[in-house]
Length: 392
Ligand SMILES: Cc1ncc(COP(=O)(O)O)c(C=O)c1O
Image (cartoon, rainbow, N blue to C red; front, side, top):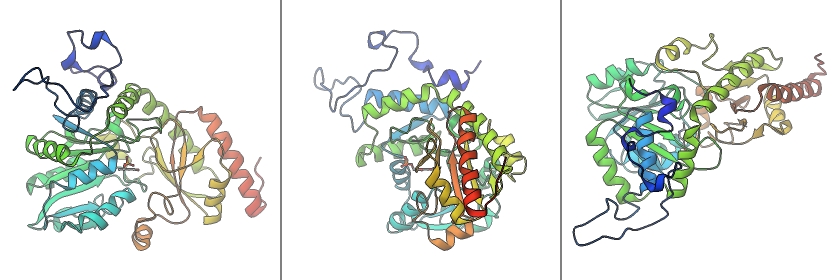
């Protein structure tokens, strides 16, 4: 019987059966740049840590196993992973990309990849006819699902039928759900990306990124690129992410349970005009998520009646932190307009619905009553300040 994901977070089947590393239960940190050879033509399997390091390799095998891929590469950040992936394309290649994406990905495409000769068409992959945008130069479709921050949900399997028909790649940034809740390769994607900084690491303490694939030719290209460009994850950071992954399952479950309660609470609040969380039955992607994912995650976006209301929340929260990033044990609220999506051109931001009234919340694993108590206090204060509105 295939092992379940919570077991795979802890144990690498292929390394079982023998006691290595003195029986250390925590995989050792091989803090070494280079490796001695016993003789000419002899190698321990490791030559130089830019090429590979045992701690990083162990992490990569765990992540490949979690995503049901044949290979995973660990990089120094999510952006390093996306940047490396763009190197498999050549000048003139065309990519169809979701219009709502993490702002840093859009910044990379607009400012670096275009300069390197790649061409992009930005569309709403969850609702537009993707096939009609494919040209003879198109090499890939690149999506997030749910998207950051508007939580648009694309049917991965349906989209993969189109990409397979045209012999092009489907790339899915799976950061928002992590492999615990969604495995895009199983649904027909060719490449999965992660900002490992988020749920995989899970503690708001380490930057990391991953590229996972089940295609040998892509893996071969990426292995050449990582050793050549040198953005592999450091041994200590690899170990921190390994440690984070051990608790991925319980963190994801707890954060999601909290997010569901907070989404339900937000829906009832004066001053909140929209709650965008795929776990709500009102979300247009709810049924697709039920089909393709094992959960809805713990990211939610909500809109306030005014910019003043949104900014006042950021000013007043204390235990909940006003900060960029997501996927850690601590609850964070982000202001996409000036933080994660500040470099996205204003007209695109607005077209995507990222207004100045929009906040994004990454729900953590605190006691949910404490989270709601803080939000309730903050909302009441703002209601009184803005409207003299009193709630019992
Ligand atoms: C969906 C998504 N992809 C990629 C990234 C980039 O990852 P990193 O910050 O680790 O470079 C982020 C960062 O927020 C993200 O939210």
